[in-house]
Image 1 (cartoon, rainbow, N blue to C red):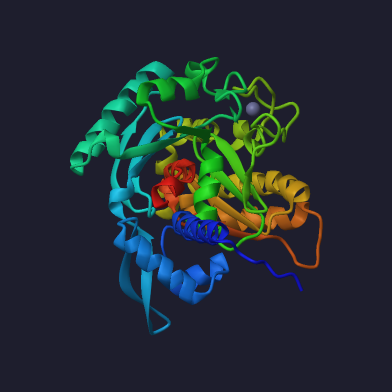
Image 2: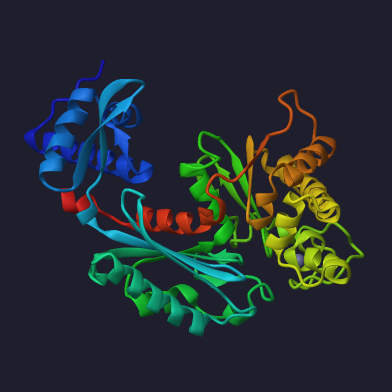
Length: 391
Ligand SMILES: [Zn+2]
């Protein structure tokens, strides 16, 4: 058996490494009891208790009494004063922002509609005003903001921080977006595709929690997916992994904004669904279709069910490639619940490779329209290095 004779130096670096493990675990999960902390870090309960006591008195951690399964416990979070992050989602039709602490608690949020074909310069200007307003509203200062996570509805090259595919977000293409954000906010920026961030949030704190491999499919104005493989977002070599909305399902179909023909998005994207109702129902929004389906409108229910079926065929391709054990469906159309999901499961069963375990669980998003912006905040929290503050 190997025995390690620790010098005083290595003892103190071991202790520092254990402190960092605890802080990282609290940061990752947002908050845990001491018993849960011992479980996820592999440290003994006594070590966890000592370190938590020490870091609480230094102001880094905050503890509060709670209970688990009827037993008293101590809930450990990062202290509010440690810093804040901003999550920003700029989707095709809406901008959302959250101001969150490092314990994953949202302390302010903003949302505003966006014009179609919005442009990078004007929307970043607006985002700057809204960030300042959120920070002011909670009596904080911008100096408290440690990092900013940003989600966009297009594939992002993780190396260059630019959009990789022309046509999907015209007013933003060809612009070094991450650099622009960095220059504007002077903070570390984490930029990603919005579906990837939705996947991250559902995996950490929503409907994909506990899954080993998960796919988050966002069905809204556009269609996209975020893939979690072995606990990490899978982006592919250029950032376009998971672009299920541009999977060809009808080779002779309509021209898509990406330049291809018959993409899934040309069949079940918001523009396509809205067009189906123009003659019979007038100008509907995606949400109106969902609400009218809930109210019993047969044609709205039929169109959502057909969308579910098409989504199931595309999801079957995804399942054969990445084999997730859970599929979480989010975005505005997912608010239709089983009207969308039941036909999706049925199509998935028919089209995916048969296995004894059956098809993956197909569930509705837990976080609803907040998934992507929460994912942006979580990515910003991940980017924050706080180990130096505990030395
Ligand atoms: Zn396309």
